[in-house]
Amino acid sequence: MNVKQAVEKRIIELCNQQGIAINTLANISGVAPSTIYSMLNSKSQNPGVVSIKKICDGLNISVREFFDSDLFDNLEQEIK
Image (cartoon, rainbow, N blue to C red; front, side, top):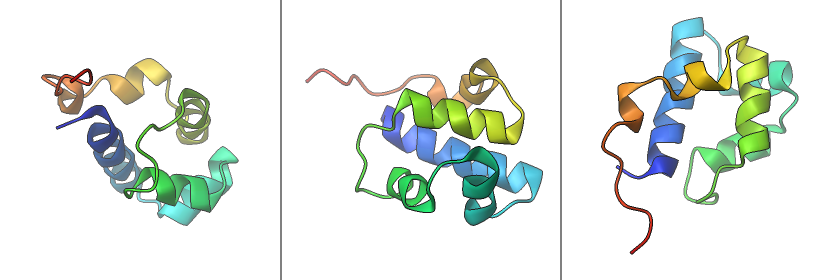
């Protein structure tokens, strides 16, 4: 799994844990729905740190908590 896929899965996982839809996440985090949806599909290969921080703020979690997941263990090498 690469980091983009891990971020995608983590966003979905956190939304499921908090019982919210992607559009709700966009509203509470101040990130455009199109930005979040592009992070969840192949349009965005490099999710921005600022967008991730805003998502964390909307979910009332820290960036550390966002990345504190087994999803981020053993990621593929990004430099090829």
